[in-house]
Image 1 (cartoon, rainbow, N blue to C red):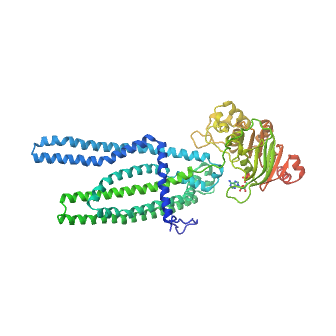
Image 2 (tube, rainbow, N blue to C red):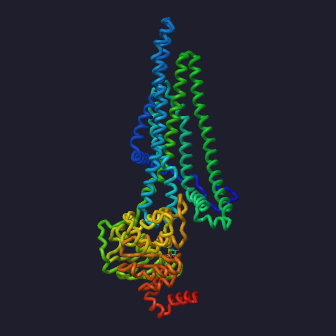
Image 3 (cartoon, rainbow, N blue to C red):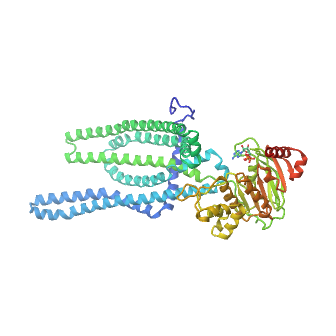
Length: 625
Ligand SMILES: Nc1ncnc2c1ncn2[C@@H]1O[C@H](COP(=O)(O)OP(=O)(O)OP(=O)(O)O)[C@@H](O)[C@H]1O
């Protein structure tokens, strides 16, 4: 039913109903309402004062109509008394004035409390959005890399983020409204029941179908939005590609703009049609069921008219009961409306709480072994095999490798061979599926996770270009030394960023990138020097450089590698490179093919062996002749 003809991409069909059995439906309702306390805790954490103020203001709002009715009655009584006593109009007015003043005061209190509530709601909304975003970011920080390499994680993130703040606030408002309506209703229900239980049943019973229908629509709407998360992200992705600096060159030169924009439009129209369809059905059913409630009201009306004409009740009694019918039915509908909205908000909060409930698997040992200050035995891969979550094939298979303290090891191999994966295991971004990685004889998993990472400096080939100052770009290698100008300067020199800094208008304080004002964009190689310097900022025992010099000019690369031994003296250095001029400077070279180490040895040994390394080296050397 959600499928729109003529679309190119086949979509998963949206199934409107899954909670088939009664018990499943009850469980769903329980879950949705079960999220209310959690939402309250969240709001409470975000801003206690506003939460309390809103509660007080709601109670004032609940009490005001009754007080106003009472003030009205006092005014009428005062007028009637003066009239029957035939007092002078001025004196009569004088008697009524305090009551008029009372009503005016109530009116002013009402207006002020409405404004105050709007104000506190605004404050709470801003704080709440911030609190929720912070919790989402904190959770993302705690989660392992594999979550970020999985599309369904982004759907969860998307669902958690979307509307969470507005829904949490909705739960607070909804809960307060339920209390308000309940109080009003209780007072009316007593009077109504005393008059006629049957009429009470007819009036209230007629509003129940609308309540049930609204609940079903809330459920449908929630599931539609949740199910839609992947498509919605695809739209956001297109928007991103079409509007950021990193893709603008290709978008222009390959004329991708309009075709991609069309995809964006198409996705929007599918969503739009689905939304309109749902809204239309919701409106139709609401009108139909609203008519049912009105019908019951007019049925009761006719009954009262009949009783009045028959002389069973007075004209005043008729007016009184009619008011009672209308107001109590209104309060009942209001109560149901609030409950339905609460249910809908509760469903949406489920997404946030599910996300916040995700647990990292890569955790520190309960009683971590301290990492030794100086490595004695180095790093050892013992029978390590690894498969990415959700993949059947092995990315690494039976890796046995020991890297001695101070050794320089190069990893070479074709694209997709598993080199970067090996680094990810070494830095505990992933744990091996089989086997162990030992740092100085102790399994990496027995150390404190942060401690391990602190001791290893890594720059990946897809390093980050922080749109921040040079100082921060380098200093982030050791964030607690961000203000240590000397250390940052030394790291810049070792990584080769010193000559970049020399030409920048603001030196170390120059803003890099084009995203922010006065940003200075660097060339690919210049960025790489900055990233390399970031790795040198770290004073760890292990330095890992994944394609560190791919974008450097030959001269600079030569210079850095001439000094490489000196720069990494006493440290383990692992470098991945496709450039043999770089690779040959390592003590040993491991060739990785299809996830296995197929050759290992020094440059001379591998050349002498005449295997893959020798073949690739000759091929590259040939290219330069
Ligand atoms: N996050 C991931 N999830 C699933 N599979 C992955 C992931 N990252 C890499 N792979 C797969 O693991 C294998 C090894 O990839 P890896 O990135 O380690 O190769 P590499 O040797 O570093 O290649 P390159 O020289 O191209 O950088 C490849 O088959 C790749 O498809």
